[in-house]
Image (tube, rainbow, N blue to C red; front, side, top):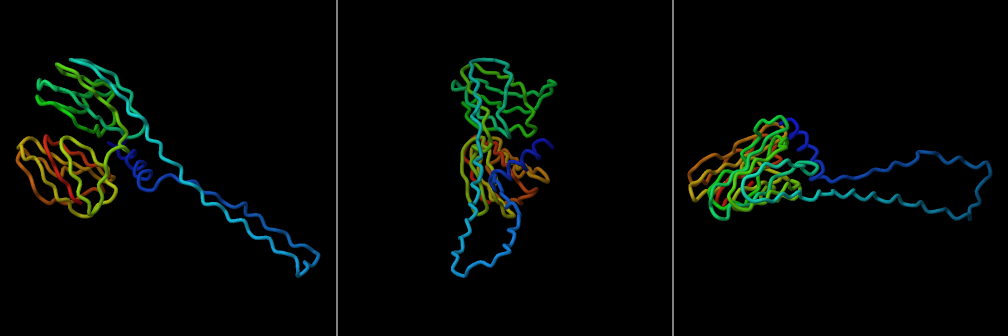
Amino acid sequence: MKKLVSLLICLTLLFLSGCTTTQNSDGSNQSLSADPVPLDTPVAEATPTPTPEPTPIVIPEPVSYTGSGDDVISITPPEGVYVFRISGNTDSRHFAVKGYDATGNSTELFVNTTEPYSGITLDPSQSTSTLEVSAEGAWIIELVSILEMPTISEGQTVTGAGDSVLLVSSYGTTATISGNNSSAHFAVKSYGTSRDNLMVNTTDPYEGTVMIKGDPLILTVDCEDEWSITF
């Protein structure tokens, strides 16, 4: 988790402020001439110092893996914080994607369903190195920079469907959340600089207002149908 927090702090600085370069003058003083300067000598105009252009943020290309049926794959994530964009199980069989770190310990169960699946999930530890796929048909797994995710800010309503990840650009004190009309599992969790916060966790249709805690930078939504979040 410490790795994710440090990455999130760097990400926030890049995402909200951008990278800029600064330029200092040489600080040298012009020496005075011993000879008097004629009054009619034209005064040279000072050359304005150009404002440095911000360094553009380069978003790495997604890393894609495709296959069919059961498989175990070693992954090479893109630079920076990334998410998993997964789709598969068009025949409505069992479909699961589970992660393991370099020592073989489980990280996250990213997908576990008997329905056709298309969604985006997060590994909070950012330590997954191997994926175990259980499937009976074709699937696609993409490792995508989190900078490609939609954003949410104070006073804004964001709607979606299915598992999703949002970047938080600004926030107030409360979040109004609704979703899960199908009475499946519905969870909304924030990851922040000071703490994580499980804002909603239910298997019933949900509509309510909750506190925003922990200086959130990322929101994850675990949902099988439509949802709405307003900061």
